[in-house]
Amino acid sequence: MRNKYVSFAKNMGIAAVAGVAAGAGVAELSNLITDNKTATAIASTISEYAASYAVFLPLHARDNRDIYRTPEGKFKWGEFIKDQIKLAGGFVILDIAYLTGRPFLAKGFLDSGVNPSEASLYADLISPEFH
Image (cartoon, rainbow, N blue to C red; front, side, top):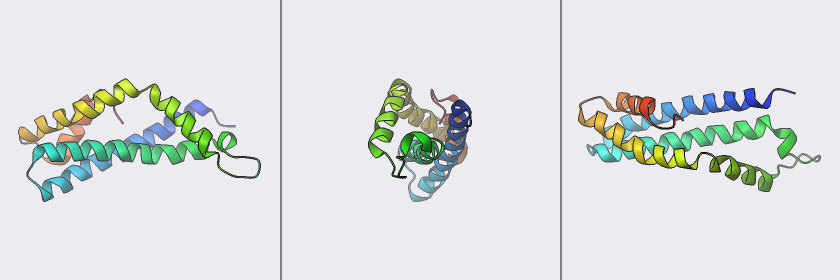
C-alpha cells in the first residue's frame, strides 16, 4: 500500500498545477471578451478554485479505493462526500481569504499593466492559499 500522505501531496500538487493553468487561461480568455478587470480577476479566481477541486477529488477517490468502494465495487458516495466536507472544514478560513483576497490582488496587477495570465500567476504566488 502506498503512503496516503504522499498520495495526498501528489494529488494536491497536480490539482494546484491544473488550477494555476485554468486561472491563467481564463484570465486571458476573459480579457478577450471584456475590458472589465474586476470581471477578469473574479473569473480567473473562480476557475482556478473550481479546476483545483475538479482535479483533486477524482484523484483522491482513485487513490483511496480501499476506503470508498464496497466489496462489490460500488462507490460509497455518502462516505466520500462526508469526508470531503470534513477535509474542506479544515481549510474554510483559508478558502474564504483566498476567494476574497485573490481577485483584489489580480485586479491590482491588471491595473498596473501586467498581462492577464501573468497577473493571475502573480496573484497566486502571494495569495493566502496556493491551489
